[in-house]
Image (cartoon, rainbow, N blue to C red; front, side):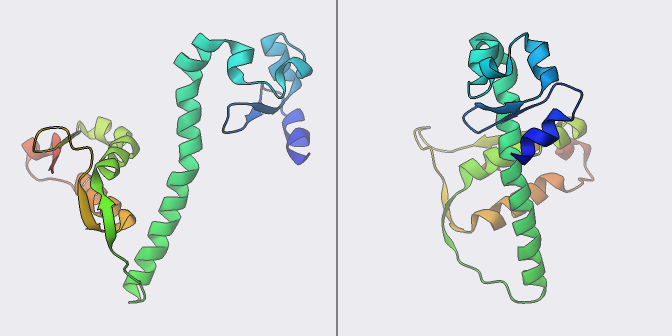
Length: 169
């Protein structure tokens, strides 16, 4: 396997895991760091190797973010292609029922560093009895995400407006 050759040449501890948090391969430095043999680690879960507490409290969140990163990268590529198609007048718009609540949650997660730096708080308030867990509009998820995230990215001339991005549904 090509990954084994690459990882084995790295001097620092290195492991390759899958979406089920199972080790696919580790290098010698990683084995030494854990004090376990390659056979004791490979094909086992990170939780098995490091313990439930360390995995759940320190590692899982980081891996989930890394795994989600590829989806964000794919979305960025798709957004660029869609923007190009719009500029050329070739975009094929297909509106469909789209729940914007998860879109706001994605924006909050994806722009957390920007919001922290600019001291912006994103809150989503939903009118009604609080039992709704969806707010559906007719649109496209990608375009809604782009539109709402651009609102957060806009520089605001008024200092009070820099602190809150408030979306009401």
